[in-house]
Image (tube, rainbow, N blue to C red; front, top):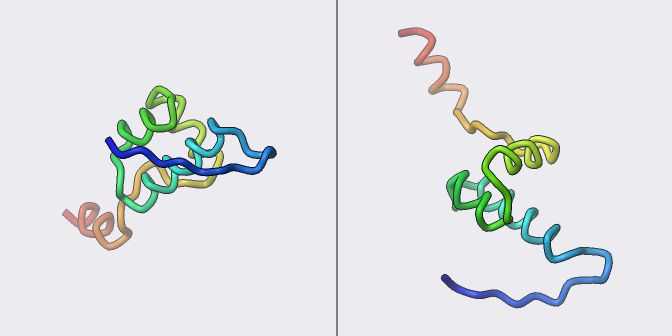
Length: 72
C-alpha cells in the first residue's frame, strides 16, 4: 500500500481527513465499500452511517439501470 503524508490545519484531525478521503474515493468508485471503511478505520456499518450523513450515496445505481430492472 502506498503512503501519503499531508500537513493538515490544526482544525482538521487525521481521523476526519481519513474519513473524508475514504468517502470521496468510495463515492467516485475508486474504492469498494469495505476498502473505504477500512481506510477510514471504521466497520462497514459505521462507515455507511457516517457517509450517509455526508450525503454520499451508499448505493450508486444509475437511474437508467434501475428503470430497466423494474421493467423486467
